[in-house]
Length: 361
Ligand SMILES: *Cc1c(COP(=O)(O)O)cnc(C)c1O
Image (cartoon, rainbow, N blue to C red; front, side):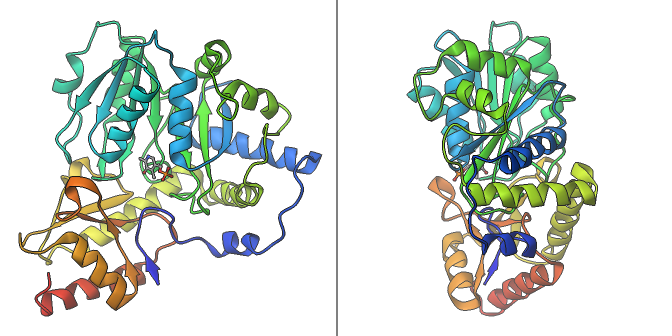
């Protein structure tokens, strides 16, 4: 089975090796020391400002999306929410559930956020903005330099869902004026699903302590206090945190964020160059595309994208990623994160060629 989905993705041998070990007890100085190192490296990979902290939540990426909305914002805030696909839509739903006032910037799916649709909100007393780094459902990478500059100019608190974009695309909390950002274990970090991580600057931490969230499990102030001694309030996915530690140390050794961005870009470029002859069209323009995923539309209107996913899974043992909602029948995606080799990409292209020969694509 070759896995080209966008999570869970193919894991490294080092990660798999740790996965077969027993899980240790965690209220120990050894575990605390490891957690302090996890925090230090995560903050450094996010290029977080001085005095930033990392928060380790057991729960998939959506848990940290929801936890962020609950802890950083209140009903007195006024948010801008970018909705350019299913993950942007999830942010809209979270604001509705938690009664955070917001304005939705609804984009046509596959389209970037432009100055035209952002700058009209200048000087209108917005206090927060939330969006993805990469909208995984379409592969759009938003212009975070533009967004950060806009937020700084308007004194807006910027919370970024970098769950899929982290490690694949350029991202710097300092340069992009980001107050808080999240990623998840099963995306580019290539760990088992189970945890998500939030890096917060001093302002984000201040909000957690003053906002007094009505929740026990999502009380970030409690996590921040426990984190001072390298612990979490409740039992975390201990095994994943050990795998995270090995992976973070390895990333540092391999050259950090720049090296990881380069690997992802090289792999995305390699795939996109290899499919030029196929009857497939990129759903998102190359210039707006993330390195993490390529969303593709069969050029033949009669071809059902979900059917292609099924045939490739059942007949060739390869998983590409189907789309949900309105895009399900028109778009499928190929992920570029995780431990995927060029030989495996070649194999997928051969399969597409075979489908063309069989007149299925
Ligand atoms: C994967 C992903 C999430 C989280 O999804 P979970 O299934 O909850 O892990 C959130 N946002 C983006 C952009 C993602 O790609």
